[in-house]
Every structure is written in C-alpha cells, then in structure tokens.
Amino acid sequence: MIIRRPPDLRYSDVTPKQVYLNRRRFLKAGSAALGALAVPFTALSAAKLNGVIKGPFSTDEKQTPRDWATGYNNFYEFGTAKEQPAQLSKNFRTSPWTVTIEGAVVKPKALDLDAVMKLAPLDTATAVSKGGRW
Image 1 (cartoon, rainbow, N blue to C red):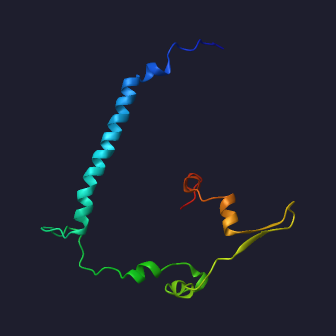
Image 2 (cartoon, rainbow, N blue to C red; image 1 turned 90 degrees about the vertical axis):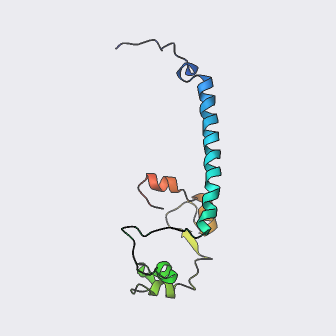
Image 3 (cartoon, one colour; image 1 turned 45 degrees about the horizontal axis):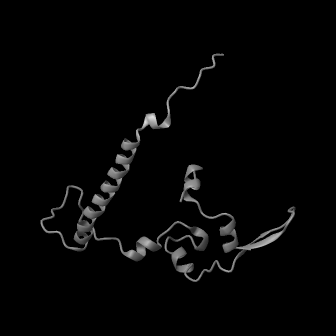
C-alpha cells in the first residue's frame, strides 16, 4: 500500500477570497434585481391584459366551480359517492383525540396531538428523501 503525503494545497488556494466575496456580492445583487423586477408583474397580474389572443391549446369550456374542485375526492371513509366525504365530514372533529401507548411498554402513555407533534414534528424533507409524499 502506498501512503502519500497530503498535498500542499490550502483551502484558500482552491477559491481565492476575492472570488468568494465577489460571488456573494453577485448573488445579493441578482436577488435584489429579481425582486425589483417582480414588483411590476404583481401589479400587472391584477390588471386586464389587452391584445391577448387564444393559443392553440385554448378551450371554450367553462371554469370548474370552486365547490367541485375543493370537495370532490376519493376518500371513502365517509361514503362511496365522490361528493359524500365533503358533505359528511363537515362537522368531523379530530380534537381532543389522544393516542394511547400501552401493552408491553415500560412507560404507558396517552398523548394528544400537540404532544405527538412535539415528539415528532412534520419534516417534509425527510418524508420525501425516504420515498414519502407531502
């Protein structure tokens, strides 16, 4: 096995300090410029645009009503018809629910949702990295 001496290369030799600082200034200036550009577009989004023509994928269909888009689902705990879950779960309350840990455990406990969230807060990055979904 060949054992080599570490190279005489310091961290500052890889990226000189001036280049590093210039990159930081560039990113700051770029984000400020993008923020300044976004202001006129937010004002335009509220205004009606003139001269807009329909594209090749335009449609004349009317927009889906809000109650259909927000209440139509496939969760069958409250019924098998698409509209039933939204109708039947209106008054469904999940508080004050508790989770009971009992059986072959050293310290049996009853935890409410707040206690569970303190022990295991939601972490979307972990869920996604382990193949879960938001």
